[in-house]
Image (cartoon, rainbow, N blue to C red; front, side, top):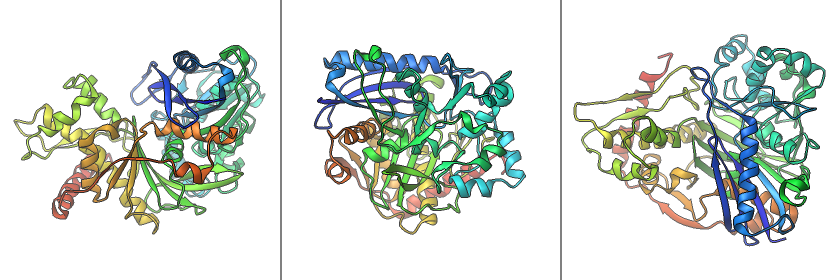
Length: 495
């Protein structure tokens, strides 16, 4: 068996990538799927369409690579986190569209729980805050708003899962209702200190615990695919939420190592080892990965809009036709202008956690044009990343001072990565393999299958493409960042 098949099920598309015996990415396939916006601030996916996209891309990658099920040692899955699927256990049919992590419909519900004084308990147990971002309030909404669903849930007729659970259920023909610790840690229902679903929180949100999947390590036996799907049975041996998979793919195994992934959103994870840090700066405590029943913890900062701001330049403003045009356009901007775009299209994530504010642009003058908008859009990603790094450094003395490892689509932009290094005042390391999320999923499954090296061996395979060194002087850096903080203050809903 010479290959591992990685499934990277993201927010806007699904990819399947075959990795070879040397961990190099080979044949791949990608398929976008429909985004549904039934109301302002609501985001949904058709879970059936997601499953169809996974099936199609896996088969296409196998066809392109000329491999059969007999050539594949294992499947690794990484997925958009927090997105909620509930399905009928008997038929496998979803009871409603999946509610996506970006969805804000439960903002008032979360605010009510916070006002009642529940957030401290929730944060202590889960590392998370009471925010619509996480799965728990979305699941509670479904139980309260889909006719008859609560009664069916209490009768054990329906199952809940994040996207990984949904895919595994389908791949195993309903034989496995499981998840991994990193996805469980993002639901708001999982006690990451004790490694179990939390009865007190489930009771608070009125969620029947019989709906919940079994939680396993990232490298574990998750089931075997129905032979009819891929022409033979393939074991599923690795699962990690997308940001944790990127942490694995970046080989951030030592406490103090920091990675930042630039996809639809931006997510920075700082390895804190055996220490679960309770953030004083509205960062999240989470599980970075879990092997042999032992969790490694992380501090995480989540930015909702990163690559999505480039999509907005393309699809909303229509000032570029392709994402690759954004860097050259930004470089052509008038240096005398200083626009600040606060991309709060669905509220602001860490460290602000303001679900009600909306995007704004500050500093417009008469001759502001497409180039200035492009620069402000790309710079917003750097400013938001600095917000996260500043908060993490304040939370944990092991943070700060080291290189930041970057990945994801936006990391291919030299202009954006140079600005990131400049505004952070720290070196930014871009690896040779930018598909670190899929790589992490492939490695953890292949390690379990015995075809890839262990942690230490894999860390030695990490290869640098380029380091971006900061060039901006400290006075300019401080002035630019102060302008950003002022723009955010003017944008927040409670300012």
